[in-house]
Each structure stands twice: as structure tokens, then as C-alpha cells.
Length: 123
View (cartoon, helix red, strand yellow):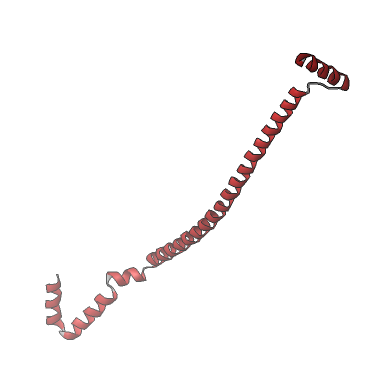
């Protein structure tokens, strides 16, 4: 195909035709058409916008990750405090149960009777 074009250039005008054909090929090459095509330009803009959006989302994700680390640390601290409080409640409950075992009375008369019974048992 190029040989046929070259033969026509020689036959019909030589160098001037070659220059015109070179300019024609230059301006209408695939790269130039792709750069000038409005659809491709719009798609390139869309790609850039989406890349920018991705970068923004990544920044937000990083911020959230930092916040999540803070939240996780706070949750761990609160969980430890909760366990300590539950353990304290268990200890208090055991102490209450132990105290009830030692003095199983609700009034003074029962207390006196309890002390006398204990004295009788130990005598």
C-alpha cells in the first residue's frame, strides 16, 4: 500500500506531494485522533476524577484506621475496667456471704442466741 502511495507521489508532484502526505499522516495519526477525540478526553477526565476520589477515600480510610485504633484502645481499657469491677463485685459478694455465715442473724435477740449456741458448742 505504501509503495502505491509513493509511486503516485513521484508521478504527480514529487516532494510537494510527499510533504503534504506527511503532514496529513501526522495530523491524522491514531495518536492525534485519540488525543483529539472528545470521548477519550472525557474518559481520561473521568479516570482522573475517579483516581482523585480513590485518593480521598484512602485518606479517609487512614483517618478512620487511626480513629479505630483509638477506639480499640479505649474499648480494651473499658473492658479491663469492666472485668476489674466484676471481680470486685464477686469479692464483695463473697465477703457478704462469708459475713452472713459468721453472723446469721437479723436482730439482737438472734445474735445473743447465736453467741450462746456457739459457746455451748465449743464448751
